[in-house]
Amino acid sequence: MSAKATAHSTQKRSDQKSLLSRIWRARYLYLFLTPSLAFLIIFVYWPAALAFYRSFFIFDGYSINRFVGLNQFKFILTDPEFHISLKNMAIFLAFEMTLPLFGPIIAAEAIYNLHNRRHQAFWRFMLIVPAIIPALVLLLVWQYIYHPIGGAANIILEALGLPPQTWLADPVLVKPALMFTHVPWVGGVWMLVYLAGLLGIPPEIIDASIVDGASRLRRFFSIDLPLLWGQIKLTMILIIIYQIQGFFGILVLTDGGPANASLVPGLYLYHQAFGARASEAIKDFGKASAVGVILFIMILILSFMLERFKRSDDKGFSQ
Amino acid sequence: MNILPTWKELRSDWMLYLFLFIVTIITFAPLLLMVNISTKNSAQFAVNPLGVTFPFHLKTNYAFAFKLIWRPALNTIFVSITSVAIGIFLSSMAAYILAVFDFPGRELIFWGLTVLLMVPAILTLVPRYLIIVDLKLINTYWALILPYIAQRQVFNIFVFRTFFRNLPKEVLEAARIEGASNFRIYWSIVMPMSKPIIATLALLGLLVLWNDFVWPLVTLDNPELRTLTLALYQLASAGSAQWGIMMAGYVLASLPLLILFIIFTKPFVEGMTSGAIKL
Image (cartoon, rainbow over all chains, first blue to last red; front, side, top):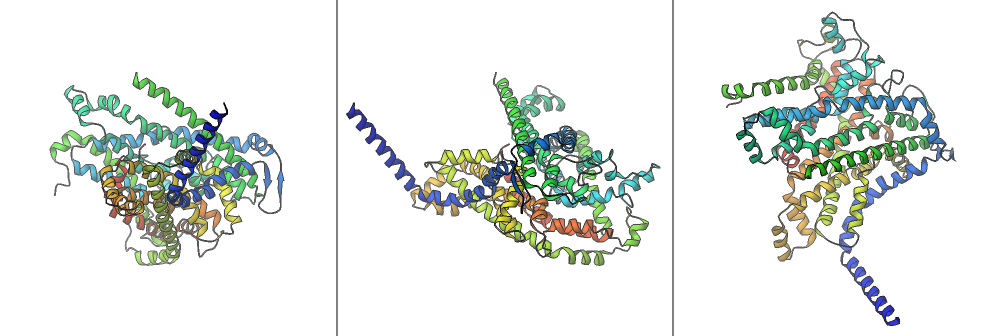
């Protein structure tokens, strides 16, 4: 038995030695990996951990730093403003799952089905260009369009004999007005992704469908759509993640107004930490961190749900 | 040249052409509006904001707008090019090591990177800001550059890794047999073969950083350092309603990326469709 133990320990030692020597042999690999990992640790892992830690404190960045347990979460989850922001988010998200989800697919199909190759390249270029214009520039142009005095939207209404509107300052119109800033929802980069997917379909499949006399529409539903399903699901996940956390456009155009009609959770967080434009609110980085944790958990749960849905779906495919 | 579709093409594809034409017109309408208004002085705008008016006041509007945004534009160019260049260098090196070598801890690092895909930017926004405050980097270029380098790492590493794994093994093997060092193989063989994917990742990175608004808004208030997006935002919220000058500023702010994109369309599209950006 003791012999066995000795054998075991020598075996273990030689394992350790070989592990150490393997690590030693890879020393330059670690060296070249270090800068990349250091950036991730300092600016992603560490802040992510800090967010959880800070969420248990009231912290204004200067003098006040008090442990309050779960009170921040209790406050946020019962705050009517936070509820409004969730409701607004749900409305925006529901809209994003319609035209903005399918627009790029339809545009990619239109380009893919052109018989003339050079025209494919031309229209592809025309539809990507808007994605290259800085998002802020487009938002500011829309700010002009919705401007109550001299704005293009009201000039068009006037020409049609309709009464002018206040658009972004109107609690009913503000949401559709914000959704409309991405008209016609064929979005550049996503269109490219779908187009790449379509071009990756083996030509034999297409030829076979043509021989079988399938119409374009039939082919779209029976061949293209199932083969693009992976990309579509990924787009859905990314849309959900963006809608839960995004607030850049709304910050620029309305700052959540009027009367919180366009407030979303990300902007709610931003206001907690950096103050609303309208009011000089007290900064609380602890509460903002807690909002971040809540949104993170929401994203996590929804991603896992979609992942499961994806898996059960894959099973269906292989059967 | 046959730029216009032939009758045969029109007969079979007219619905597609019509759809693409309408969609393109709608997409470009706000941009045309922007260019059109950028030619107007206040009097012309007051009388006829939407129609084309003569004479054009290009020189006054654009010269004035240029004076307001040249410095912020240089800031943005400096910050975004520095971050993208360093970011691509570091991430491609890391991805090369993770794709080609087997060493203790590789699985752990890979697992750690995958976990990061789940961490949304909103979770780290406030603590990241507090870290920048603690490091006394508020109101410096570093406040932007350092987090920007980190921000693109994970995505870049995953794309590069997929791309490197699909490179022909024989070429790397041949170089190794001839005694090239690992760094040499990475720098003189792998990187030149990866030009399309580098162009794609660099352009995507530039696009994201060029557009970034919230992060500079919270970390910079020195007018000398402010980025293009901050300058445009301030121009728009100044309340002067000098629409001609504002629109001229928007046009100028859009041009650099547009020109860059037109030059690099081919490698960009090649990279996007190479299969490395697997979705």
